[in-house]
Length: 436
Image (cartoon, rainbow, N blue to C red; front, side):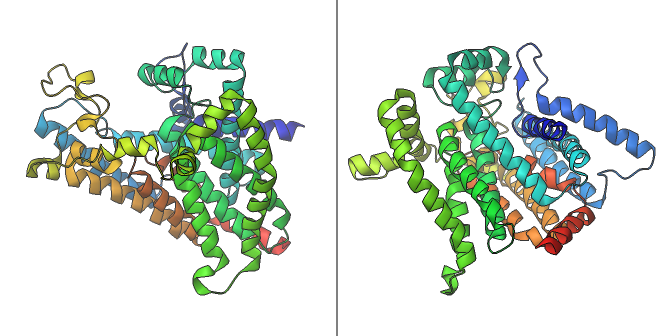
């Protein structure tokens, strides 16, 4: 019983990290920042006593890359004489995420006696399942929704109003595209872990991955359709694992896809029933899978957000902007009292496309800086955990694909693995190998 309580506590703490939010009675401090504060104190104490901590050559390396992101942003802001410091403090944000990740992983290590890539992955999956269930409860139980809207401020006043008006699902800190990118990352994690279980003595646990995958795929899309990126990449990876490209079928790996198809076959009648009998569920399903409904009803694939995205394709019209940007990431009319240009609705140049937002903010220099920062973090994880190398390739692909839609990155997911040592992960892998 005590162990169960400890695990639940660790899941909640990891959720505070992965989906940070502010309590309305404590404005200005979200859950991630609070965890980071604790982490910095612990790290300082360990460093002062010359004990092992997360400080290493790898941390120095990624800090240097993060400083380049901050430096290119500072140059763009200074040269363009703007006040948009969104990415100027990226080096600080990186260490805030790392410190908070250190707290989450330390608690998990304390409970289980170790920390490994697989264990952290399982916690990430549990958190996303928790958020999806929470989103449904918030949506269907008026009292819980009223409590969440009154006490949680994770999106800012403008976006919270949007959530209220549109009726979009949201969890405790999980909403809109940032949540969708994290759901997408976790779906690829499930695909990786599930295919690894195939053909082993632990194969029986794969059904839990299947259930988690389908729940996150369906409800995650109700929250943010960016989740679809993860669905597509995960399915492509599972098809790759089967061996279709080699024309040699791996039956063990293919079993995961068969289980997904089987569970989905059982779920479909329930989904259809809810779609036809519950107005809220009807609207949520239509939003989540708008493209499929459009294909069935109009004969063409059409998603409102994709149509909006097409109109956001706008490129710089001068060399200066291409090189160092205009120094604006968000809508300048909202934060710069000296701005006298066009009154944009939404983001600068009315584009939400990640790659374009980076270019308009700090040019190709800034885009390359953050591109290679994420790349370096992923490569460090691959070097540290060679047996899980393909997992980090998948996460990099998720990140760079999501940038086609929004500018949010998944460094926070990778940060959790940076604070795990190679030795303890290999020790866990060896124990699993011996038990098979």
